[in-house]
Image 1: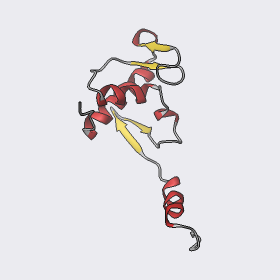
Image 2: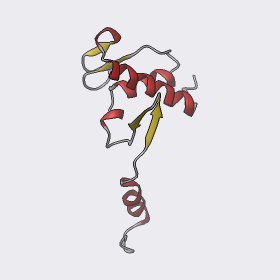
Image 3: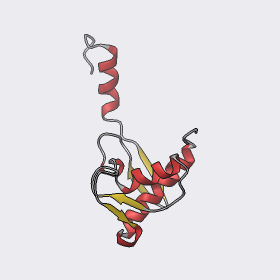
Image 4: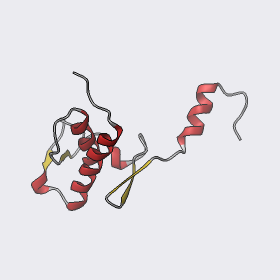
Length: 103
């Protein structure tokens, strides 16, 4: 039970902190809880797929070892099947959302 003396913004943060978000693509379920999931880390395959969709760059599997454009880029030739699937899931997730950059 939440303390009634807490401010509304803190109560909302506590209530949503433990809510997990999931996305299923091609039979695989991914934990896409922002701030608490390796799946959606900045620069990772899922993140790069969703970013490519957002910017309408087309599907080109890749990811970064660390932060995007600040670390080593790994191209499709060196990606595992799971990493490619994560990229494709990120791409499909954003396509379904329809969240695209307006130029």
